[in-house]
Length: 201
Image (tube, rainbow, N blue to C red):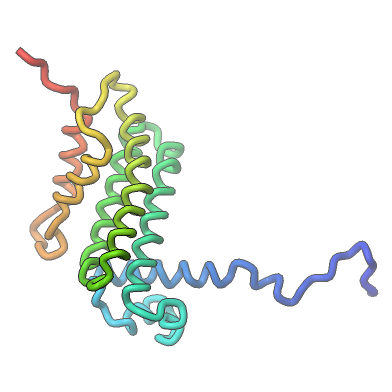
């Protein structure tokens, strides 16, 4: 049947729209999984195997390990930031949403383990990534904190930046100590943050 003028011609490439982006995200997800299990020094072949691609595909997207590590971390930051509003909408209680998000944040910090070594010699890149981390995640944490505290009729005695900083400090060394359950301790911190301030005598 002939194509009429009212029927738009389909480009052979139209099906490819969005595929490179999805492919890169799949590589980043695979790399994040490997980093959590083996650290950022994991062999590229391990990442390629996790992603189901050849080593050349990894290097084509990320020419250096620093490029890969930074891209993974930015990807994880975005996923963590996007999860905040979604959890608030899905969970019945804001406190449940906050605690679920904090769990994701702890996982993000595990992925970040070894980042400084991977970016050795690139102070500007490391500083820029830290700024991006703070700018994206502190407002998300603040909105979750506010929502969790509203039903209690109270306000937190510490701001979102310090909550995230405290969580980060509690996660230091967790990857190297199998006996240390950082998630348990972090959730105790959240309980303290949500508790009403003690009454002064």
